[in-house]
Image 1 (cartoon, rainbow, N blue to C red):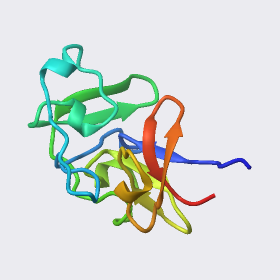
Image 2 (cartoon, rainbow, N blue to C red):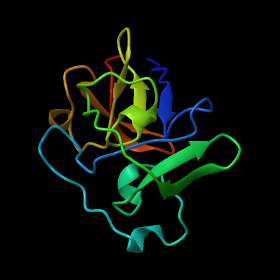
Image 3 (cartoon, helix red, strand yellow):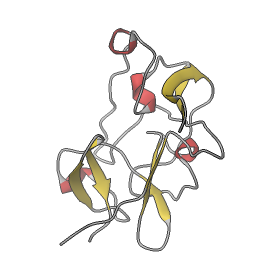
Amino acid sequence: MTLLLFLLACGTPASDTSTDTGESLDSGTTPVESDEANRDGTCGFNRDCPADQRCACSEIDGCFCEDGVRGTGRNGVDTCETGDDCASALCVEGNGAFYCSDTCATDADCGAALPTCMDIVFVGRICVRDA
């Protein structure tokens, strides 16, 4: 069985930006943000950036922290057009729409729209739709 997953992490080429509030996972956990973990300015999620910055991406330059407001979309609950809409900066294809996703440890960490916690190469364990 193959699962095709379309990711809109850290925005898309049309917007080149992403957003996050620092809250993650419907289980109520909040990731710790650390300037220490981001010495080179690269990022994959908004939580990889200092609290006053967001993870902004382009296909040419990759993803880097920059000043800006973060999105508020919740993991497996809220729809998104780009990673800009999501607290995590990660927008993935769901069933019939795109939804904000985030990291997870088990399926219990995922919302109803993206109920499966799965390892995705180069991204990590995130919530995705059922295959």
